[in-house]
Image (cartoon, rainbow, N blue to C red; front, top):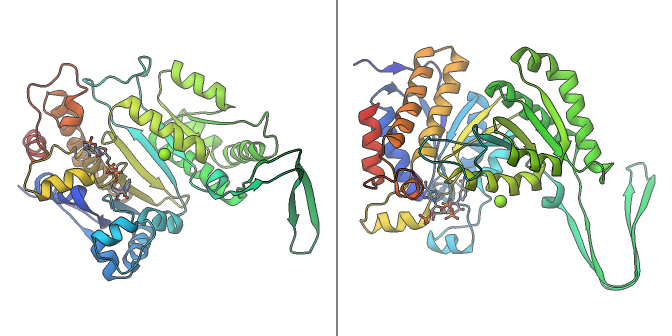
Amino acid sequence: MTKIAMKNPIAEIDGDEMTRVLWALVKEKLIFPHVDVKTEYYDLGLMNRDATNDEVSAEAARAIQRLGVGVKCATITGNAARKAEYNLKALYPSPNATIRAILDGTVFRKPITVSSIKPSVSTWKKPIVIGRHAYGDVYRAAEMEVKGPGRVELVYTGIDGVERRTVVADFTGPGVVQGMHNLDASIESFARSCFLYALEEKLPVWFATKDTISKTYDGRFKQIFREIYEGEFKEKCTAAGIDYFYTLIDDAVARVIKGEGGFLWACKNYDGDVMSDMIASAAGSLAMMTSVLVSPHGVFEYEAAHGTVQQHYYRWQRGEKTSTNPVALIFAWTGALAKRAELDGTAELGGFARRLEKATLDTIEGGQMTGDLAKLAVPAPEKTLDSQEFIDAIGKRL
Ligand code: NAP
Ligand code: MG
């Protein structure tokens, strides 16, 4: 059998622990037999990040930028325990943070649905995609404890020395205060990424804030979204048959639960943090979620939404078989290959990616699955497969 050729390479970013083990298996069993894979390989395993003083993380991000498409395995975010465990020279920032800072993107997360696993919300017929703004608000706030009576003010000092102030509160006793911010440029790129993704996936866009209460702050978000939509995307969206809907956040939450799904929910940073965990749990498993970072310049990085599944890895190291679900990793690869195919105009490669996705879902719907899904599936499977057996079953079907 001749293998499917690739015109241009993608940036391949390897990672850590159980996902690194599965990464190799997915490539060997499901992709290499069918595709003559072209990648630029970056090893972001913790040992290599340490060996390169973490330069490899920035190199990987620049490779994604240059090639337009990347695929990333889950990576350990260093902390004191990991520093001791891996005997590291230093503590490095999260590779995801490094990559996001260079690509300036928004993260989109979408449940992968199968007929045998019903969402907890019975009205949902189609997946709800979350687009989370990843800059500012409460995540970059200044906070202070107020010890007793006194005035708290916001003070802006322009570089020309001109000052503006507003009273936050006149405290009559102790309390707390918080100052947060966002930037027009960041909100604009968030809005652009959302509309680009929506066009890509042919999904209507919902955006919600609390602008009735926060007239200036949330009002700015609402205004920028509207301007970007009207000015840059309305015609394209209309032509694609999708629209833009703005409402208040509490109204949005009620509509999400009563609705059928099938839209992109653009969320401010905190809303996205909280709501993406709700959507993921209601849809079943962390491993049944795709995640893609879309930059406003049209660069795409596909990844799994979950971590390195550390505890499974320790069991695997002891020689045990684990039933770790590789679906999110498979979909990271198919997402990247399909995007490469689209950009290069190589239909055969795109067809392969879709067939691999279908083989994966059909395998689960046919009753063969890993333990996390076996707990939820109706009807329950007779037997739970380990990771290798599950990947082999997909390979056979493919
Ligand atoms: P995790 O790797 O997502 O795993 C948390 C738990 O979720 C697992 O113990 C497992 O539950 C379940 N799970 C997650 N993925 C699964 C899969 N594919 N199949 C089956 N079960 C799955 O999160 P963590 O343990 O908090 O983090 C481990 C490491 O990952 C950390 O070092 C963290 O820094 C890193 N991390 C990386 C990323 C990223 O690179 N994108 C994201 C998050 C975390 P059971 O044990 O009940 O089976
Ligand atoms: Mg969270």
